[in-house]
Length: 278
Image 1 (cartoon, rainbow, N blue to C red):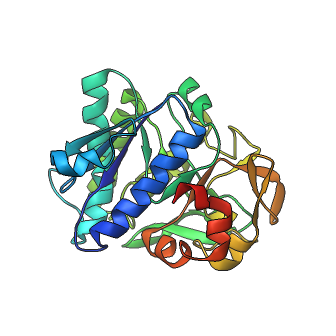
Image 2 (spheres, rainbow, N blue to C red):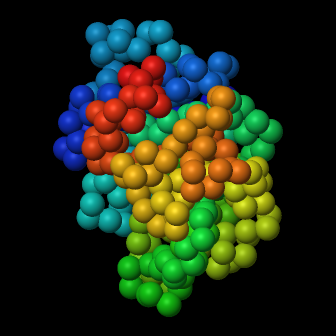
Image 3 (tube, helix red, strand yellow):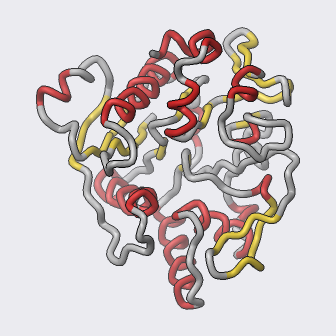
């Protein structure tokens, strides 16, 4: 499998915190996805001394760059996140194949090599929460149910879908709409408002329906970020990670945010579940 990710210091988290998450991600890939390669774009990990630390992993470091022509946010973090889709296009042009985006604050818990068999997938929150989730800062009437809301921590697109997404993005700009949160709201508008939903692979919805891979892992109503209660309800059933909230579902990736990872990483439950990745 071929992945790409960012490990970029923008002053939001310490370099050590970023690298701790990167190491956990890499160890989870080593454990569960034997045939993988990951390209990591970084603005500080490109020296030979730094790269030596990662010599046991199948990782290639590249200098981070921002190819956003007209940044749409004042936030460095949101512009960094939106730039994922620009770098994705460059990788597709270079290698003539699609790479899987994965956030560095993600743990792979299963052999997800089956995703090589599709040229696209997206991850919704799932769960039962049907609160209206707006997609735009300046129009709260355009919404999707919270359970259908698409995350941007883990996805794959083809060149064709990339082209269609930017056609949708141009349409959004022509309507003077401002996306709330980078590409995840672009994904949501494209899938649900423009009705591309049934033509694409939505994990847990119309593809691999036995899995949970997003925020619904962390609370019974699927409307919470990572937290200690959700962590305490995780358990391994053999090699399959599950939650007591939905015991019939398999968790193939576990998504955090940097803030929640920092809070949970030193808990006894985290060490019980993932101590071998630290």
